[in-house]
Image (cartoon, rainbow, N blue to C red; front, side, top):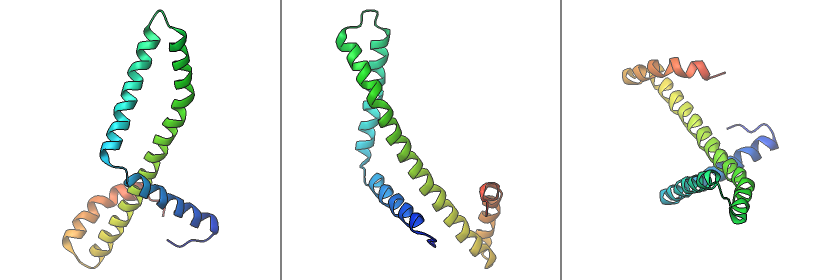
Length: 125
C-alpha cells in the first residue's frame, strides 16, 4: 500500500499488529470467552428475575454494568479488524482474478464475471 502520510502508515501498522494478535488467539480461548459471556448473561438474567436481590447481587449487577461495555467494545473492535482484513483480502483476490481474466484465462473469466457484479456495487474506485 502506498502510504501518503505518517497517520496512514501508523494506522496500517496498528491494524497489522492487532490482526496478528487476534489471529494468534487459539480457538479454545475464543470458545472459552464465548462460554463465559453466555454464563455471565445467564447469571445476569437470574439475578434480574429474582424478587429478593441481596446487596451482593446488586453489587454484582453494578460491577457487570460497569465492566461489560468495555468487554463488548473490545469484541466489536476485534470483529471490525477481522472484517477489514476479510474485505481487503477479497479485493486482492478479485483483482488477481480480474488480471487473469484479462490475460485470457477462461476459468478466471467465469469467476470474475460472477464476482464483478457484487464487487462493483461496493467498490468506490
